[in-house]
Length: 173
Image (cartoon, rainbow, N blue to C red; front, side, top):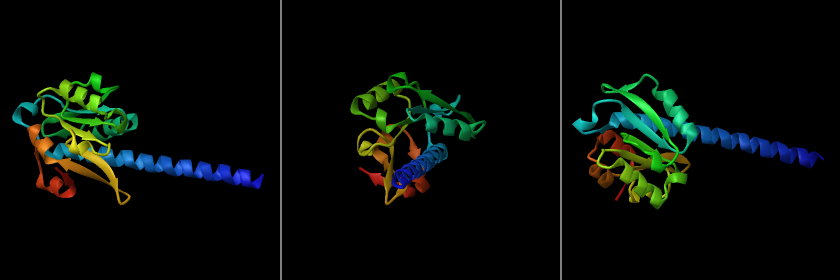
């Protein structure tokens, strides 16, 4: 009976620990995404109206971004966060986060066709995506969250990245 209670306690403790770690990961991703608004330069035609951050998947990340960006601006643009159920629902946005679950080849192709010619920074969290169509890809390296940056993909979007952010990134080709 004591072993049974110990096992239940350990499982409960481990689940609380992983919930806390997941919560921290969501918080850090939201902070990074919000700060991307300050360290990328969009072309003049993308600097009017609302500044839109889109999220495909990851409801917790969407909630955190809504909370974090409430009544905030980037330049003269108010920041608006939109949640998309899938890549098929995407509308124009300045930054588009696509969760790991929604980052398959077909989903990425759909996202890119939905974005069209609009200059959108695509941010993902699935291994290898920065080598494909993403501009930024979150990774865990040495037990720390970091991000990969594909400067070619950023250039194709018509965006300019600050040297400060570039120095923080793992550059992939």
